[in-house]
Every structure is written in structure tokens, then in C-alpha cells.
Length: 397
Image 1 (tube, rainbow, N blue to C red):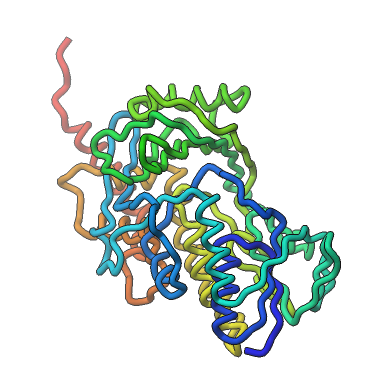
Image 2 (image 1 turned 120 degrees about the vertical axis):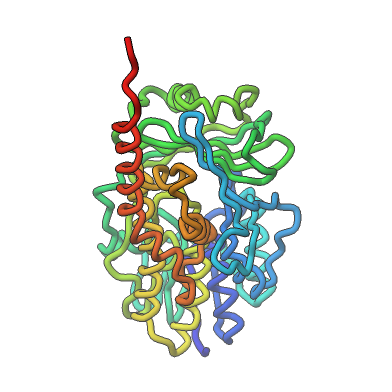
């Protein structure tokens, strides 16, 4: 591939894309505004990201190994182990601190031949020019992989918000965090609260990323500290794990973050990862979508079909998006906590395959089937519970 490619953002998506393109013979410059990555709240990987890690020889040593996920709702909990997925190739992932993770990605990109320029992008002149505070950079392609700000998408008038998911989030890091049954070491824990949910991502030694996502229906009000405390108080499951926890990071917040782009590419430009489409983080899908999108985009830019790349990318994100709707309307937890006599093997197989991120392999039918059938299954579970309640003997005064 004989091309000069300018990539905005030296995070995981940008560095993976740059590495794949450089391996194909392109000259790649990564434009990154922040020389030293921030210690943001954390990131939970999905097992199907491991394919990209292996192909690019990314160093995962030292990160907490993650074998599953626990979902809790008012004292009820269920654990899903990645080994239960449909024909899993990988049965574990990692919990990573982004300040370490991102530096390793930059080292990976440089090892594959990419150049990193630390500069702030100010404007773009398509085709082929990025105006920075260090001067103009020129290339055959400009790719925005700089994250959920969707800078180029917004500049080109392509960014579209999501009317159904206008959520906000606050996050931090804590020490003194406990894992309790059914948690296993390294599991991510998700705790439901009215109108939202709490994440707990362990890093080892009692340290964890902890945060709260709130929908417009969430009743929490006040400062970040007040909402954070109130969220924990609203969840007995979170209280058990965070009763001795102390915050060690300032709060970080974001809002109205779910959005997509009406086009992922055009003459001389492309959008990849969160810069193309950013969906709610409840299933930790962001890095997986970005890494897979980077791998496929590199092939599409090297004589492939850009429209086919866009379609595949949207379809994979769409599987997660359907289940995210089921999360917020209660269908996901209804199915996850269904009475044992209703549990079918494919329930868990489909859910775990989704949680593992296996949404791009056409031979894996379980995750797509579950994403389509979850509302139907949840309705059947609710009807069963209603029938059981109606058939129960009336209590005597």
C-alpha cells in the first residue's frame, strides 16, 4: 500500500490501525494531542479483542486477567464465565489502566514503523491536510480515531446523537474494594440502580475503577460526590463491595455520549472506533469495536471495499446496540435472572458470546440470535412469573 496516512489519535484504535497499515507498506503518522496519557478511570477488555493483540504482538503482561462478568440487582446476582460462550477461542480478557495501556499501544505502533507527532489538530482541509498547532501535515488519507469527541465527524456535519440514550456518567478510582460471591478474581461487576448502573473494574490489590451511569430517568441529583454516594447507597450489591473503599482519583464526568456518524468514510477520509460511533459502555464494547474496525479498515484502504467495511462495522455495533436497549428496558436482567426451570443452555451461550464480543464471526449465530430474541424471551419469563404468582395460594388473614 503506497500511501501517506494521517491518523488522529494515538489510542488503541489509532495505533492498531496505524500498525496494520504500516505492515501493509503505508507511511503512517499518528497525530496525538496528549504526550502523557491520563490516568482515566479504566477499561475492561473483551476476549475477542485478543485476536488483534496477538496479530500485532501487543504486550498484555501485568494486567489483571478477567474471566467473566457479574450482574447484580437488589441482592440477586448472576455470573457469566467467558468459557460458556459459543465455541470460544479465547476465554479471558484483561482489566487495564489506560495510562499504561495507551503507552504500550504507542510503543506497538512505533515498533511497526509508525511515526507519532504530538500536536493538537485545529482544522482539516480535505483531501489530505490536517492543520495543527505545530503546522500543516499532509497525506493521502486522514483518519479520525481520536475517540468519542468525534472531532472530524462533527466538523463534517456527520455526527448524530442518540435520542434514546442521553445518559451521563461519573467515574473514579478507589482502593479498599472487595470482591464478594459470586465474583471471581478479575471479574467486572455491574450493579443496577433505579435509572442507571454502577461499574466496578478491578485492577488488583483492592484497587478498582468505579463509576455510575445515569439515564435521564435516574433520580440522582447534586454534585458528583453526592450522586456517587447516593448511587452506592441505592445498591446493596455495591455497598457490599465498596463499604471500605476510598476514592483516590478526582471524579471524571461525561454526558450525552451515545452518537454515531451518517457516513464512516468519504473522499480522502475515514472514521474509526469511537470517532465513528460511540455506544453506551455497559457491555465494555468500545475498544473491541475500535480494534476490529481498525483491522478491517486497513484492508479496505488497501484496495478493499470501504462500503462493505462500513456495513460490517455497523452490523457488529448494532448487535450490541440492540442488547443495550434491552439493558435499559429491563429485558437483559429479566433473562439473566430467569428462574432455573426456564433457563435454556442457549440463553447463557448467547449472552456470554455477546459479553465476549463475538459479534463479527458469521459462524457464531448465538450472539446475534440472542440480541434479536431477548425481548421475546424476557416477555415469556415475565408471563411465567405472573402465572406462578396467580396460581400461588392466597394468604389467609
